[in-house]
Length: 144
Image 1 (tube, rainbow, N blue to C red):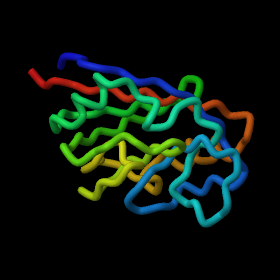
Image 2 (spheres, one colour):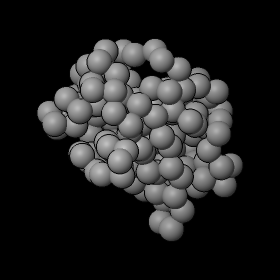
Image 3 (spheres, one colour):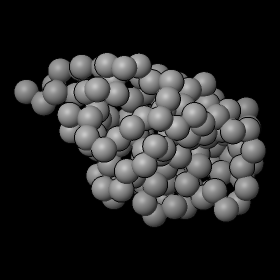
């Protein structure tokens, strides 16, 4: 595998993190989270999709493989998916990983192998603490 582009951001946990959505995972710059946001695993994100660099956005539109590494201290979860020509990376506050092929300005990747409900429950439990810092690293890969 060859790394073509990387985007990193951090966000905080929140007492209302549920991690129960069957098809999506979301991180947001917003600071509040209601119990209806069962896909949101992080708030107060340091970046949203519109903040991603131009090279990352261009490569993602070439239907490249995208890997997302979620880290909390020594714990890590890896999610893989794909880019798509219809991705706009235009949303000012949100980043959404999707298991489906649906795209909108909030979508970072499609055909992901995990949604919020697939994340380990002890990982979700850590994200219920507002002091928990979640590191998110999105990498565009070229498979050799």
